[in-house]
Image (cartoon, rainbow, N blue to C red; front, side):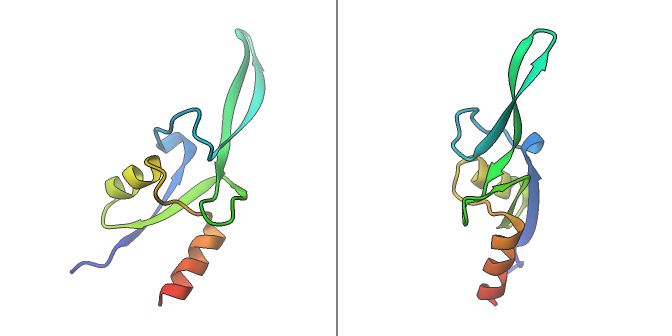
Length: 87
């Protein structure tokens, strides 16, 4: 059996619902008005803000699907702790 891979995602790579509680925003002024801009995420482990989410899965597509479904996704520090405890 193949060992799962580790995958990193930024907000630009994911199709998350704009109302997803894990997204972090700031307001930006544009020529067409004020808009919300995604800054990053809340970690699924510590709930702190981060700019990337890490996941372990059998493929990048599987990891992306699981993060978008809200089932996995941690900041680098929580993910490192997860991997250390796993071994």
